[in-house]
Image (cartoon, rainbow, N blue to C red; front, side):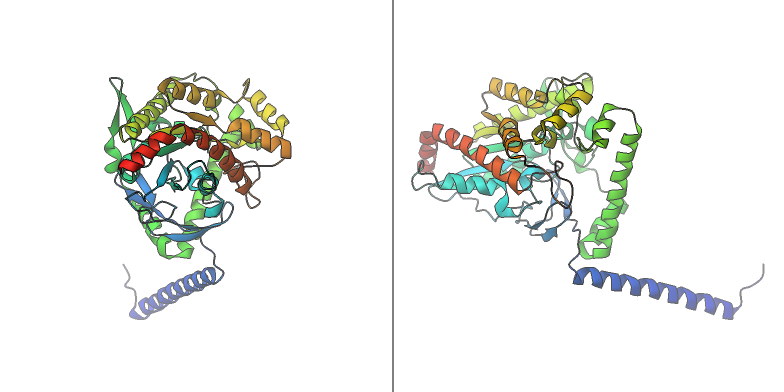
Length: 414
């Protein structure tokens, strides 16, 4: 085998160094450019011992991918102000559990329904000099199982008077099933002898090496953030294309823009498969378990079922087309089932669909979606939060009035 001359090795080394230097220089130029123009896709996800994952505590970033908002998290990783453990004197505390609809990084903090509720209730004379404090524990991607864990390990210590479970049927039921969700790093509860048991195997799971490196790099590099987001976008588009290539009804409603790939459509009718009924059953048990634990702490649980975009589409013909393709009489099944379960358990429940649908149709207004994404899909925009906040605020005022004497007694004892 011929030997490589020293001069040739020297040439190869110089070329390698030149190439490496060019790559580093290009990276630095691109990194600097992205920072100058303020371009970023921050990745703030970290592992959490009880909830599987959460936002990084005390983080701050600008969200531009859907809507626009400046986002900051408190010391516990929630998008809200810093709270004191001890409840202030003459204060009624309302804790809100939910997913991305409650967290609402698509709008500015003051535009969220939780802040609007706090302002609305605070202006009422019903409680005289009492202050209303609404605490937002919403976290993107969470299902009812993670919300139960949030109650146990985060919310309970603050001793709220009311706990609002903001329930999104579009994905919360799926989120509660390991079989349907398939995410190994989130907690699940399983049925065992009629009881819910925590499957804590998520604590042993770790991010893959590639994901761990990517997440860590994205904490510091704008270029890494772009690469991470592009890779996520490619995976999402592949899933959509795979769905569209099928001949299913789900594929048709997605292709027509009537449904979102990330939301379930099977929720709109009675389950025809065991895996869906099992997911429903666990979800109902989770709500009952949360209610029991909240009541044991001296607080009261109320449930608000949120809206999937198609349920409140301003055009009746689009809602009708969606129902016809999926062979549905209407889209009320998930809200009806949650309401019936809550009524059996003695839990007050409000469905936002009727009120928000009426508003959307009357004013021909999209309550979901943004100009930089797509109107009629995705999360609530500012108008959606205003309508939801008003409906929830009016309803909570009645519930608070019903429990006024009990809340006063508890606060006096404290």
